[in-house]
Length: 583
Ligand SMILES: Nc1ncnc2c1ncn2[C@@H]1O[C@H](COP(=O)(O)OP(=O)(O)O)[C@@H](O)[C@H]1O
Ligand SMILES: [Mg+2]
Image (cartoon, rainbow, N blue to C red; front, side):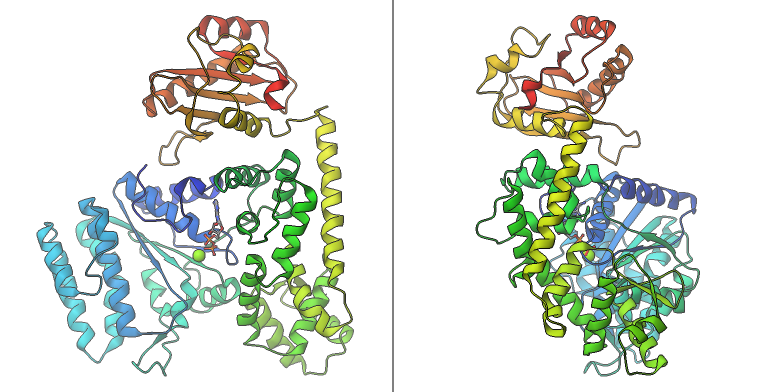
């Protein structure tokens, strides 16, 4: 797939998992054609991977070129005059539209991003004359006094064009809450336009151009949606990644940044990060000088650095967020309340309990406003009812916060945090050993990644050895250099979904590529039916990837049934159950 929009994640391969979310939203986008999709808000605290998902959705939709035109706009946390904003919003849309219709991705980064005349000229020269009317209309509205009308035309532009051209557009608007907080009616930026979002009351209902909005200030965004856009949006809450995706991400980042991990530390990183893509990426990108992610002790030190050191990416990110939230309620009591809730982890407290336990001297109303503001800033969570509150569930945020503030409020030794990390890692190590014990494994809990590692690093050098522990390889087979060694997920743009554990593409077309399946956490023998199912995927990948010389390979720790074995021999599908592949 070609990635039209340059994704902020960096190399597109780094994008991991989010299978459930991608398939949900790809279906949602597809359903726009049936006018079935309702505007949706993707909610999660900052750095949870919202933008990563939205940019990927944009690229897939752009690439599919299947009657739905993607539009992506991100609000920055920057004050803007409404006229400048409308111009930017509108021309971003127009150029993305032109890029899609002409298939020329250079228009996603137009040279003349702020120029109406140029935009109209380009539209004309590309045979999209029908855009000229609306471009002119907006240019004229910009010079008028009535800026309400300007915003209305601009806001409705995607829908207007979709309607007139009988097309469908998805409008993906990132950090939507800033629409009501960063745009000013006047050039001097004194009069905040605090209800531009309200304009979406009818726009968001239009099924030919529904919105997918997202925001990192969840409480704040929800507030806007509930108060000014009631019942216009479905809420989709983005959580952490499931364990298998988190582990995959750890191995991928390890490979990409060339920072080795062991099976045990891979497990520990995924668990410590609680599946947060931001924590995993920060652990690998950490500036800690003695970073060693191949031992639990090294991992503990890296986590400590990230949590307590001002150069820690995690600490810096959270503190920026917390300070912004506190600037609205800044005082000692707010910090005390947050710390108190962290101490009562797992419990919800009522407003009255908080007031009594902390002996706060303020009115109920005052406390209510403070608690509300903290909820809006995602610093604490609302409990079951409007009167209950609890701490956010995030064991790293909790430590960053305490590391910064607890000292200031009560007598507290930061070394306590180090001990907590050690204790937590100890208990995770014990769990990891228990898991392996359950399967009687000495190693190879994540067998698929170990085999990938072997193919990447060792198989070519120890060609004879690895051949000797693998049956039914073609006579002229040799392990070789591979240009890509990873799992294979049929790209989400294809409607039929399947994946295999191994796809190693030979660098030199004369050598054999490998498509393989690994069966590990199951003691059953690999059956003939399973081989046949594998063969179908094998043929499909072979075709999609235009491979000529390629072998199928099945690693099954539990071995193979007799029929499976016979079938593999006949079909020349390589087999192994030898644990030397995992050492
Ligand atoms: N699916 C993913 N695969 C790999 N890395 C991810 C993924 N999602 C997020 N990340 C990492 O987390 C960081 C934050 O993600 P981002 O999409 O910017 O979060 P948000 O928009 O929610 O604030 C990214 O820069 C990237 O390093
Ligand atoms: Mg984002």
